[in-house]
Image (cartoon, rainbow, N blue to C red; front, side, top):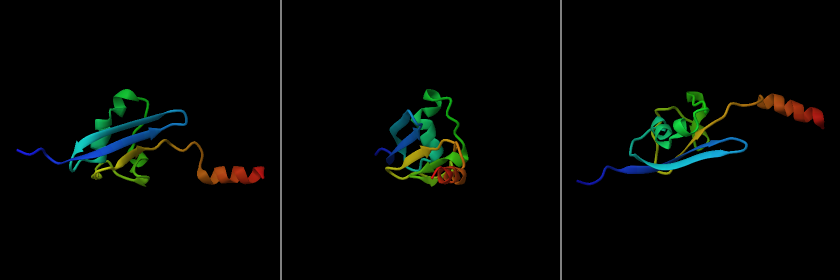
Length: 95
């Protein structure tokens, strides 16, 4: 009996001073949620808050039930420290 098809995927969570990255295989048809669980981030980095509005695949927002393709990179995003519009205003005031 042949093995079930599998895909390779990775998961990344970046902070200013550290990066968590894991590469793994999943069964074909796996989702973003499956990748999060398979990565082991919850056990290795329990302080990371994983919310549906802060995950994506290759910089595009994705839901937990989004199916993955071979080679996809799941990303967990940190909350913004400052609103981007406010950051631009502050930079403009400095010049």
